[in-house]
Image (cartoon, rainbow, N blue to C red; front, side, top):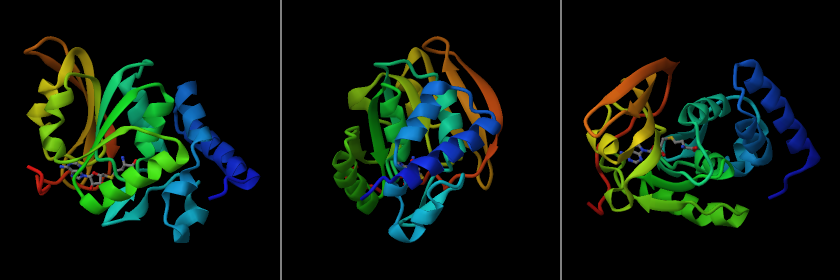
Length: 215
Ligand code: SAH
């Protein structure tokens, strides 16, 4: 795989586009400028890698739109060294952005072929999040609590296990809804209290119920 000057130039244009749409965090812009998104797409889609669009990654799933990746990343307010859980590994692109922000990343995927492909692929381009095959609704109790949690599929409701696995003071970002989702930011104020804010509407593939066969 080659990351040419042409690809780098296209990434600069992509950065200008998502800045125009309102992304301000310099660390997030730098991460997106650095990561070769075309490595994450099927070769037949490579020419579209630097449009601000979601694309198919096989198994009926998509790599999220760069603006959406940046928007969710901003809401997470990542500080270096924080422990972050991602639900919905997919292509692994969002996980790489979180790694570039200095997070310790744990990520779960419920489709085995995607999990296997991404687990084999990411280390080849120098990214090593902890990757798990399993059901995101259950979170990752063995590694909890987390400073931050990001869900990258549309959830019909906020999974309770994820709130439980959040540290007090931690933030959970989750798109909630069936066809269209409202981006919700949940702050865990105390062991028993959360505060929610809404951040506009998005479209994600659905967060599906447990079909992983390791449960
Ligand atoms: N973050 C990804 C985009 C993911 S698309 C990226 O950067 O490419 C959403 C992903 O969530 C899909 O791969 C889908 O298989 C996965 N998913 C759906 N339901 C899930 C669940 N219950 N647990 C874990 N992953 C799930």
